[in-house]
Length: 218
Image (cartoon, rainbow, N blue to C red; front, top):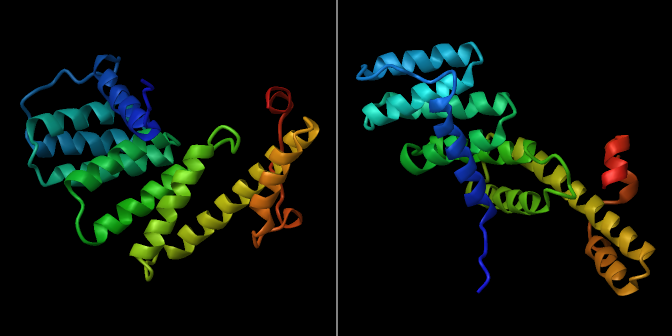
């Protein structure tokens, strides 16, 4: 029996494990039984100092000791945005998932879903290696557009969609070219047909610069 691994669940588990491992790091918090405001202010201070490992540990203390504190939603969103600014997109996605599951309501749901799309998009580093993330993000983009047709975030979301479609177009071209070099004509035709109905054109897309090591290994 084959075991199917859900990549998103795996990444979330990695993020949570990273968060918990912070407790045993040099930034471990050795304080206990403090008011919620104490933990929240400590989180804000460490975020301002860009010490996110320690901020994560203070968050664990706040969540453990004050599960129903009204400060917890704010701390969760603050850490989600801080990790995104620090390019730690998996951790940002973890906090955004926590926020959506436990705290978000009304316009906050829309904001959190937009930030998840943004974090996923920024987390795509290589179109050849991040194909599933690209496809999942495009699905999330389409869902967001349908759910929030008048959203103030829509221009950014639509821009992300165009860029992802460009990346997908380039990926199809690359795969078709590879199959062509290997003499696999049918496979080449399949990937060429994927782009045949696209409104995009390769002439309109500027490929990113590829380093020497990337050329060698990819």
